Amino acid sequence: MNAAARPDPPEIHLGHVTKTFGRPRHAAESFTAVDDLVLDIAQGEMVAILGKTGCGKSTMFNMIAGLLAPSSGAVLVQGRDPFRHFNALRGKIAIVFQNDRLLPWRTAVANVELGLEILDMPPLQRNETARYWLSRLGLGGHENDYPHMLSGGMRQRVSIARAFATDAKILLCDEPFSSLDEVTGQRLRTEFADLVREKRKTAVFITHSIDEAMQIGERIVVLRRPAKIAYDVRRRDVSPQAWEAVRPNIRSILSE
Image (cartoon, rainbow, N blue to C red; front, side):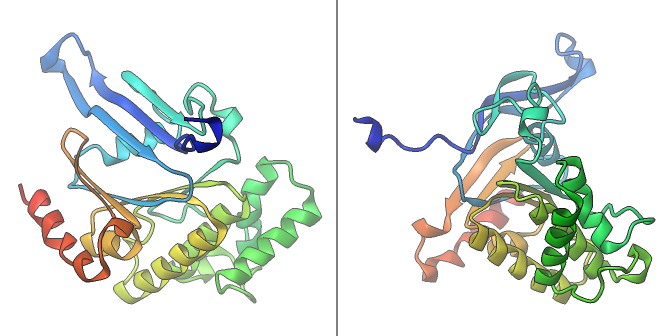
C-alpha cells in the first residue's frame, strides 16, 4: 500500500485502555471503571457514547480530555497523550458540560471571550468572534446580559458559543442538554449537530438517552460496565429504513 492510500490516523485513539481507582494490587480496595477499551474516532465523526450510570462513560471522557491518565493502555488525541501533553492540546479541545458553567459576574459576550483570552487572542478580535458566535446561536441582542438574566436554554447556548468560538477541532460534550426541557433540548441538539457538520468538527457526545443518541449520533457506541464496547453502529452503514431498528438493540443491551 502506498502512502497516498493509507487511511488517516484516528483523531482520538484508545488502545486497550484500563483505568483502575484505588490500589490495583489489592482487589478489595480497587475499582475498575474502564477495562481494556479499544476505540478509534475518525476526524469529523459525531459519536454518541451511551451507557447506564456507572458504566465508565465519564472516566473515558476525562481521559480523552486529559484530566485523567489511564492505568494502562494508550490514549491519544491528534497523536498526543492528552494527560502528558495537556498544554500542547490547548485550544484543540473544547468541552461543553451538563451545566453551563458560566461566570456569573461576566456578561454573555465576556463569557464567550474567556477561552479566547486564555488563547491570547487580541481583544478586538476575540470580541468580534464572541459576538459572531452568540449571533449564530440565536443570542443577538443578549451580548451584554448576565447569566441570571438568561433562561437555561439561553445559558447553554452561551456555553456552546464559547466552545465553538475557540475553533477547537474536537468537541467533548458531557450530557449538555439533559437539564433542559424536551422541546428546548431537541431544538438545541439539532442546531448543535448542524454546526458540528458545517464546521467539520469531531464530536464525542456523552448521553444516557437513547432518543438523544439516535437524534445526534452519526455513530453510536454503547458501553457496558466496566467500560467496554457492547455495540457500535454507524448511521452510514444502516439504511434509513433500518435505522430505527437500532433502537431496540440498544434498549436490549442497556436492560441487561
